[in-house]
Amino acid sequence: MKKGVLSIDKYNLDEEWVKQPESYEEAARMLAEATFDYDEMKAKFEVVKAEAELDIRDFPKKYKMKVPVREAAVKLKVILHPRVQKFRRILNRRKRSVGYIQGLVTSLDHKKKGLEKMCDLDARDYFSKPRANSESAKERTDAAERKALRSKGHKKRPK
Image (cartoon, rainbow, N blue to C red; front, side, top):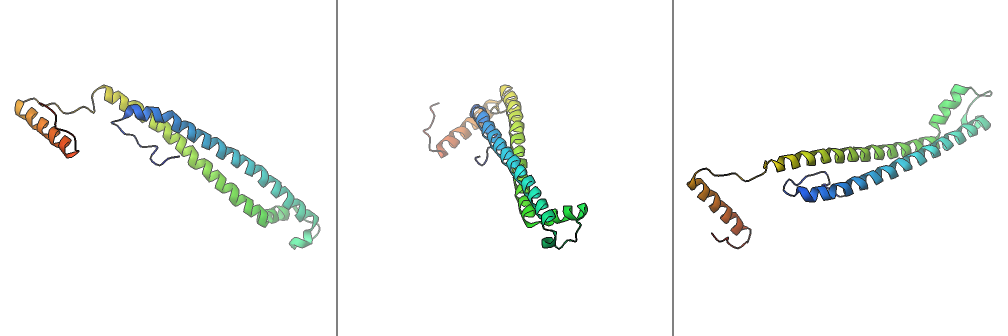
């Protein structure tokens, strides 16, 4: 996703509206992929936990446990098993990624609402140029506009 996708250019609202659905679709696809990866990793994590538990039950002496093994001791040894810890860290990273992307999708929803409000304001001439009441104020405004145009390298406007 491009940087600055959440910012709004209030002077190009039409372009912002054109980009909005594409940005949302990209974020939604990213969220779907991240959620799928998380679910896949969660399934692998459950398998690793089950394998660790079987190994602990089958070879209790390997894990310095007394026979007969107690259920509470097995659960603790499963939590402490290196493979289980490794997969838990990976699972937590995937969950964090899902959270970040969910936040992006939510932010794009907020951007859509912001665009709607800004279009309402634009329709009411909220972003319009100031209007001069007196003739001298109008001349100063015109002079300032001409000066701004010249500084940008544009040709001078005819009067």
